[in-house]
Amino acid sequence: MVTAALFVDVPPLPWTGRFDGDGAEHRRWWQAVTAYAPPASAAAHPAPFSSRTAVILGFGSDEGVRRNKGRPGAAAAPAAIRAALGPLAFHSGRDVLDAGDVTVRDGSLEAGQARAGQAISRIIDAGQLPVVLGGGHETAFASYLGVAGSAAVREGLRVGVLNLDAHFDLRDEPVPSSGTPFLQMARAEAAAGRELRYAVVGISEPNNTRALFRTAEELGVDYLLDEDCTAEAAQSFVAEFLAQVDALYLTIDLDVLPASVAPGVSAPAAYGVPLPVISSVCRQVAASGKLLHLDVAELNPEFDIDARTAKVAARLITTLLG
Image (cartoon, rainbow, N blue to C red):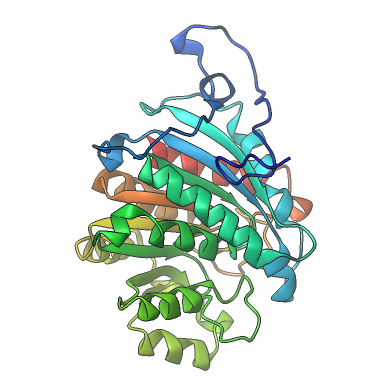
């Protein structure tokens, strides 16, 4: 089934969780989330970023991970993250809607990214906040297509891309994958006469070649190594980046976290950035009032332990949405 109005393949499914009562004081995510209905037109006066309705969109893909010679399984992540979110207490002041999933089948990654991008653009243009549940980190290029295709960007909004990740994902390969999205973004921005504003928190030096560091330098990428990610250093780094942009696209690759915290990813981290530091960055981004778009990528439920990684993803989403 394809819902043409939003380009999704799988409509929203019922959310489940513990029931403590119907009152607001008992409300959990499964009781708060409602189905998305696409608006008839773009928002004439969009709400401030800090108060926009959040729209959850799944991107069921691990084709990019397969192409990048990683461990497939991330296509099942959107359902796993929803399952982890469902029982959590709901404290957000936002409305939260679920638009269903865009899925990649038969290796058709580029077509899936294009459909997801169209859906994301519509959500942004409706004055809402897309929350995309990946998927491998090929999710990021789908997100970029949506952000770059939105009216806000076409009209000159300066958007920065902040990636919480152990990897640059700037591989120069003939076939796009989960390792190429940010180089794809840089080239697309150059073709549009713009420069990609890209920063990364959590880079693992042993897991990025000299060629990748050189590409990052050539593109003017700001980065903070995992070993340097104290709470103070991360806060200063993110504050400096936020000051340069009008709005932010935040992408969280869960392999930025230590393997003990996030075992269910394609490439578990031997070192990683402590969860309190990543959580603090999320709070900082939320407090900035500049969050335009959000995605979480690389959860692989097949390798998760006690849904540990899914629960971390859910916790970070609740932090970002308030």
